[in-house]
Image 1: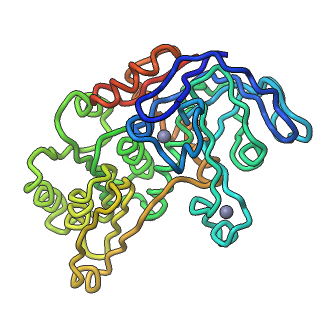
Image 2 (image 1 turned 90 degrees about the vertical axis):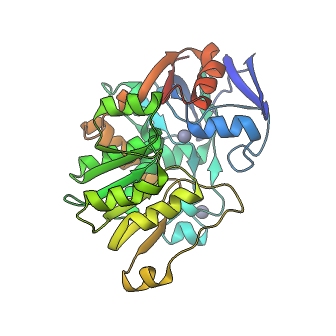
Length: 341
Ligand SMILES: [Zn+2]
Ligand SMILES: [Zn+2]
């Protein structure tokens, strides 16, 4: 089969690789839709020891397709079923898995290989995170399950509900998915983003009110002004920049929740006003990755139409276009590229 294979930072090759027949508990999926992700851009630039511990490996991690073959003992899916797979599977036995927080599993198994014609899914992933789809669900929509599950995890951390004001910092695909889920819960959504090609695309989607992030000194004041001086009920950073984490704290109101969704570079830190954290009972919440439950609930949101993220797809390409797609992502000239092998 044809696949885009990651050999190390900056080294992505268009290759022919063998299709691996599924062993016991495994599933062979014919990939019909893969989506580019900001993580791909970062990983291609500098590698990713957690998500890609070994090279070479087929690149990409957001995918949906049709079951082409199942190994012995597989239950839940059959050949010909449409299905979506997450990019990781928890161990289910470590203390954090046992505590009901499998996104923090001590032995999370990561699976890559969206940018190929087929992927052989390992037993643990099949058991935990392969979800059968309704036959009518378009693969391009289903492929959003993984990033949408991450976004849903962030929204759940802050227990976002109708009537609240939710400020999302960052207008990348995940910022947009966070905004979409918050809007689906009938929250008022304010999206903070920098003007440019991507924000123009996002504005067309009508996800919420937009605040211009290009004058950072005014952002917090503007959010306060938009909320009668009180600050937001929930603020979410989806930029992964410590100065924006700081803004997210500054823009939240009394009793509010701040979700640190975007991961910052190693070694960075922020400072917290202890008076506000205490007397205003701020909830400062990290949010990382997804769980099997979140993946299933994301699929429900997609299949039920509560969230319709296809508007984030700005380009469509075949496997040969992956390098160009990731270059567009890196240049801020694409939100999501749909790759159809
Ligand atoms: Zn992703
Ligand atoms: Zn575990």
